Length: 331
Image (cartoon, rainbow, N blue to C red):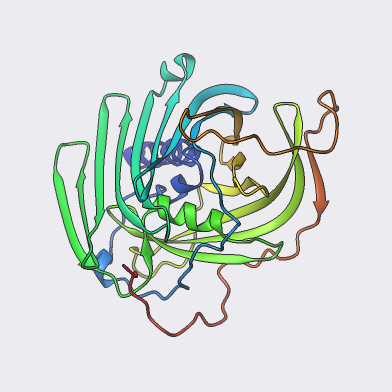
């Protein structure tokens, strides 16, 4: 019993840190849990909409994004994400790490890299390495041209599990789900659903725009849309509950075409985790001018978030019908 309790606490810590790795990381909530009955990824039955980038709504800035992570106001770690254009793909490299103090009790080093089509924003490959203390897990996912999805996962004991399947639904990896979500036009009340494969399991990610606000970043005010994520494990038989380790998360996304993730605030069982963007360093080949900012002066007093319009809808996992037509991932 005590062992299961420790395992669940480990799962909480992993969920917190994975959330740090921007929006993509919300699908890594399975770590540390044991599921009695699982549905193989290729046998999951789900229908979600097919999304395509909306022209003019997503023009990412290339370079290095740096974020600070704090727990209850106490510095806990950092995150770096590098975004570049490589031929016909966006190349994303991200890493998260606990700071020296936190590492005395729980040391985490998380790295990931992915290629996403720069035109369709559909996935090509993604690789993840998660090291907790002296244990590590590795995952590689490949979306093949013939529609087959192939993954290899190596667990903490060095055991490898290889999966090959063809999905009858519009299935993405974490990064392509993030890019597609950022490329869409959002209004308060909008809800989007994504069938996402992590290399081991499939998850239904539901994102709802709950508020429009102004947020202070590096002394300047930026308009942002607030997205609330919910996650359901599609590989868990007879389970319709979303993950209970995160009570609520709020993702602040810039309304500028760059669609920068400005902040992630998540309420968990031990308090609140805040991930804040602290700097952006443009790459030499793809530097762009910073978005113009209007509003309050740099010395504006706290709070640094000003609501603009209230929540219009908090309906999550609606009981209404989802489009009946099934889709395979276009190539």
